[in-house]
Length: 89
Image (cartoon, rainbow, N blue to C red; front, top):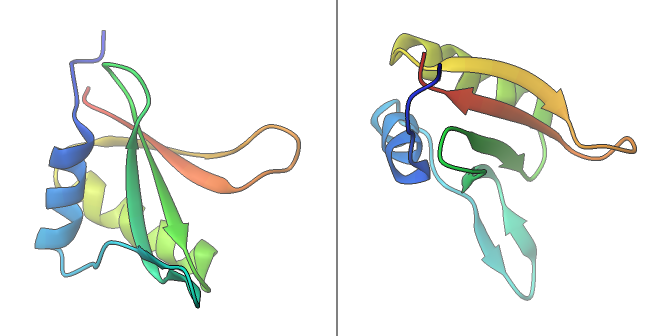
């Protein structure tokens, strides 16, 4: 059974790998980077905002797995955005 996980901890693991979080600018839209979102007590979803979504998610997968997280690529229902489901084994 997966253990409790927090978006803050996932974000810190990505930041330790040199990745920048995305930021929203009302004039220009999303600045490229990751966004970690809590999806219940045992799952965090990670998105890449800005251009290079596929490459960004691949890099985040490698980094998070190196930190001991279980990562499963996914896509939102109806052909929506790609994301990563991140859990603790």
